[in-house]
Each structure stands twice: as structure tokens, then as C-alpha cells.
Image 1 (cartoon, rainbow, N blue to C red):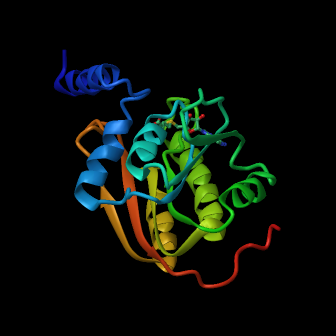
Image 2 (tube, rainbow, N blue to C red):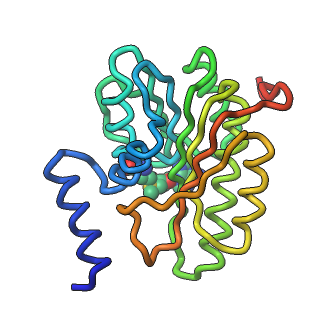
Amino acid sequence: MKLADAKKDQYRKLAKENSYRSRAVYKLSQINKSYHILKNGMKIVDIGAAPGGWLQLASKLTGNTGLVIGIDLKEIEPIPSVITLKRDVDDRETLPTILEILGGKADLVLSDLAPNVSGLWEIDHLRQIDLTRKALEITKSILRQEGNALYKVFQGEATSEFVADTKKIFSEVILTKPDASRKQSSELYLLCRKYKPTKIYNNYL
Ligand SMILES: C[S@@+](CC[C@H](N)C(=O)[O-])C[C@H]1O[C@@H](n2cnc3c(N)ncnc32)[C@H](O)[C@@H]1O
């Protein structure tokens, strides 16, 4: 077995042992260990959340006073005290529904969105960035001033423009690749800190 496969296997095994739904939970957990983005009492919106590993961790770390909302095209099996929505990020009704449930602004937006991959890298990359742009647009309407966001991006020709766009609305943008993310996979995570809204974005309502 190759080293990368062994690592993938190791995190899958750990997820199973700890009753997490996906090995992806260890990517968020490792980012959180370095940057402390998940805190007790937070309101969190997780976009592209199925099967729900990130939701499980977010719910655990926000505690009883927090609010965690997960959105995905796919059905998410219920998780205690987590609200899940079966929705497309591209659906016009998605944003108003999130705002209604939030009843205010979110402290943190997470996006681990990924399209069904075709195997043709350029196409998959562009589709993934396009999806993540939808998450960025939603963020503008739901995140509180000084709030944080985390976006997965598939690296490629459109990445630098996306990073530049996040830098226009966040004070700090950090590119990070946790150990649980396979070295040969070209995914990266953008940790965007301190949202600085430039205008009122609740214009969908
Ligand atoms: C890598 S998975 C997320 C894993 C998740 N973070 C976890 O810990 O279990 C990416 C998700 O993005 C979702 N997705 C892709 N396109 C979407 C869209 N247009 N709207 C909503 N979700 C979408 C997929 O259905 C998939 O469940």
C-alpha cells in the first residue's frame, strides 16, 4: 500500500472508531487545532455538509448554546441539535431559508463543497471553484462583521482569482492543507478571518 493510501485508511479507521461519519472531520479538527475557529456558543453554517462529519464536530464544540446548520444536495441523517437542509447552493430559496433559521448573523461559515468529479481535472477544478463562489456569495449575506469562514478549493487556474476575491472582504486569508488531506490531492483550505462587509447584502429578502 502506498503511503498516501495508508494515511487515507488511517483517518477512515479513526473516523469509524470515533463514530464520525466521514474522514473529512479530521481536516476540520486539525485546522481547528491550529487556528481555534470553533468555539462554544457559536452560530455556524456548514455548506456542502453531507454526510455530516464536520457537523458532528461543530455541534460538539459549540455546545448547548450554539446553533449549527448544515446544507447539502443530499439528505443528511439527523444529528442531535443540528438543523439540516436538503438544498442546492444554487437554489434562490436557499439563502432566505438560512437567514430565517439563523435569526441573525452567523459567526462562522464552513464550505467543504465538491462536485461529483469527472476525472478531468480542469473541469472538476472549475466546477468546484464555481460552487465555492456560491458559498462565498451566501457568506456575504449571512456572516457577521469580524466573523470567519473556511472554504475548500481545488487548486488550478481559477484559484488565485478566488483567493483575491476573498482578500477583498476578509482582513486575513490563510492557505492551509491539514495532514488529513492527502498530499497528492490538490485540495487546499482557505481560512478567511475577520469579515469586513462592504455593503448590505441581505438584498435577497
Ligand atoms: C466532501 S463532501 C462534504 C463532507 C463533509 N464536510 C463531511 O464532513 O462529512 C462535499 C459535499 O458537497 C455537496 N454538494 C455538491 N454540490 C452541491 C450543491 N450544488 N449544493 C449543495 N451541496 C452540494 C455534495 O453533495 C457533498 O456531500
